[in-house]
Image (cartoon, helix red, strand yellow):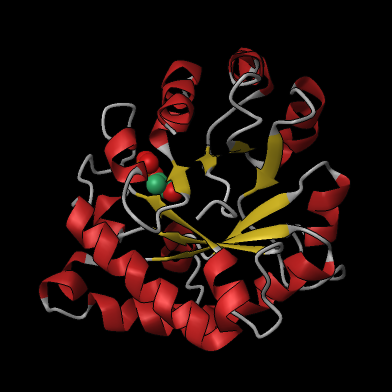
Length: 249
Ligand code: PEP
């Protein structure tokens, strides 16, 4: 679909200190040629948002990895979507499986964070993914459908929301889903999005794949129908690898 510009998003997770900004400059310089055709996003830890935003080329998108649902108030240690925006973010990841697991975030929590992201004017990347047990039990599509249904709210548009399918067993493990499995999941999710949001929005929403995307497998994963980009963890920490993935797109 020509309307769905490819997005390569890097999730640094809890990695990165101000002394390591050389990688950002390399990414920023290295991808300036690719940025017209492909959207490129880096999501550093919140402590580095402002620094990365200031260090990067203006076309490089900068996002956060999580937000609180409330705008402000007595929530010690939390960061609101408005604060992320104020620190230079245009995007925020919500519902990453590590947050769902480490912080017991359920779909209702993820949905409230999605509402917060939109309230603050951020584009949200909503992550969903099945466990290995669920896949082996033949439950993957049912689980994903339920996460998709319950993590989204009704005012989702292609401009404010991106979906990332990240099978949990493929994250940080070096295992990737097969092209057939990714194709099956993405076409299923596409159908559900069209049913819920109508033809125009449903076919315009971008669907990313995430889970051990590397320079070596990026081109084949990105060639799968209905894969509109990648969410990259480990390989986004090295400029060389991340740039190779961007170029594969
Ligand atoms: C992620 O955590 O979003 C991810 C896909 O990680 P990795 O690429 O390291 O598997």
